[in-house]
Length: 123
Image (cartoon, rainbow, N blue to C red; front, side, top):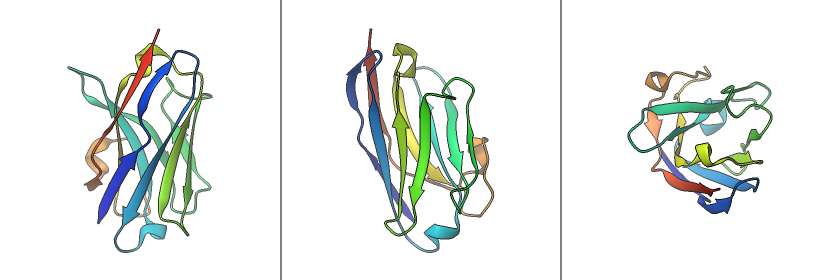
C-alpha cells in the first residue's frame, strides 16, 4: 500500500488549493481515507476523513465549511478542496488510510501514510 500526496503550494489568505492523494495497492475502494496536517512544532492533527463509499465525511471544526474531502474509487484518488484559506492552515498535509472500512479522526487508527505536501498560506 502506497499513498502519494501532491498539490501543495503557496497561496494568499482567502485563496484556494486542491490537494490530491494517489493510492496504489489492494482494496482501495474498501478503505476509509483521511487527511491530517502538521504545523512546525505541533502534533499531527486530524483534518477530514471519508468512508469507503464516499457517503460519510467528517471534518475538524477548524476546517468545517471551508474544506471538502472527496474520493474517486475508479481512479484511486482522494482529494481535499481547501477554500477560504487562513494563515493558520499552514502545515504539511498528509493523506492516510485506516486499512479498513472504519473512518476515524484518531491518527493512531491510520495504518498507512503518504509523504506530506507543504501548504503555506500568506497573510
